[in-house]
Length: 197
Image (cartoon, rainbow, N blue to C red; front, side):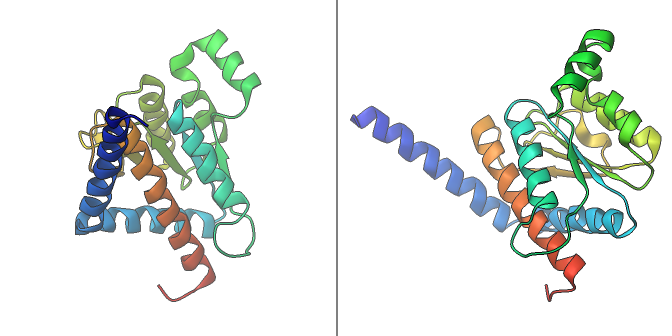
């Protein structure tokens, strides 16, 4: 690589490291991760499910998290009920065509969500209209709403639990989102298996 490319790579890694170190040193951040895991474990023990939504990279994260829950994360155990609302192209295109793209997640929350379920809404900006509408629909139906976003939080302050990561830069925000999600998945497994924390 040329010097400019090496500098770019170094700056990205340094910024990622700085954001991770800030998260690890922030007791409030760690406490919120624990609250998310508690809410998810409570819903799952009660026979509920986890719904997840996001756009673009956040949609990929929603699917990734659902996969960790339904399959396994670090230990063999029963599958955990999780649905990524970004995966069914027939539903997404039907709702988008009939009701508009801003309704693609809210419509699914209204059809699939039940009181006591958890909605995990991911948005790096905290301002994605379809994600905000999903949060509003979930709140009306009695779901626990979890927002995962960037430092500023956008419009996601209405969530029951809000995790804001220590960055304003989209790629770094996304890295911290999946890192935090992996911690949550590990904690949920441990809570449900009775493992020592």
